[in-house]
Image 1: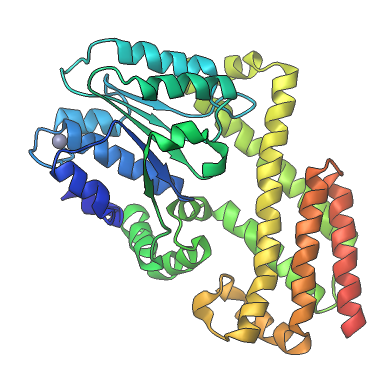
Image 2: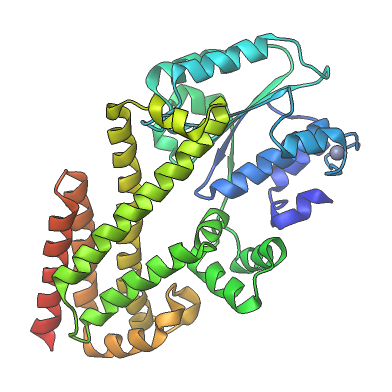
Length: 373
Ligand SMILES: [Zn+2]
């Protein structure tokens, strides 16, 4: 019954191997939605350890509860850690030593590796050995977004399962049942998250939604000719800075929990160099998301121009702006602006200061708007 929760039981392949007891020793879960892969991994573990027979699980027995709370002695959850956000050789050695021990409950040993596409070379080679020569009754599940970042020799030894994005209705239902979200809010977030449960969780945060709203409104305001480039850039930079600090703090408390020290001690453990690398990593993610918001703003106008269908659009709360702008400018303008978005992001990745990248980008946008109007 519980596989039906959040509608993740759509993967008939996994269901049929579980029901016929033909589970492989290594799986590769591929797809953009981290949350969905983790739920599936969790359900897979429960169905293997639960006292209920068959592929199902009860969610109530001690095994199911331990798995839910990540403290089942025969299950390892591994993920990228540290400033570089990678999986290091020590993590894989830990896996190796746990797999070498006898299982506590006399069943399987499971390892779930989140972010397997962020593995250092040495770690990947060590993991390959474990997968090549599996010890006893073990199961390894790798979760990844980018298959290109995995060793081909690892890929070829895993059964691949692809996780597509989910129908928007599933996300809406999840938000309503899980967070008691009102129907209107659930509908809006489900559209924003485009079938991705991880994104839905992210956008459930009010601050994150306000940030998206600010960016999209700022972009559309340019077409109303009422924008002060330098004020906008300064606001964007300070907001991104705040978001980076917030993520670092919640991230450090997560790591502190993992290694059992206080948040203050965890911060002390990070060297200055680690701190810089961590900040850079998180800044990159935030800037990437910012440019995604901008790109989607232009893409929505193109969609409206060509299809005039809200179904394919993201910023449905801005439909009146979109309608107006789409009538005033040709689609060529937006194709070229999307190129500008990509170039701005590449320029940031090439170590140009964010403030400068944004000034150049928004001044260009201002010129495009003025040239047409
Ligand atoms: Zn159970």
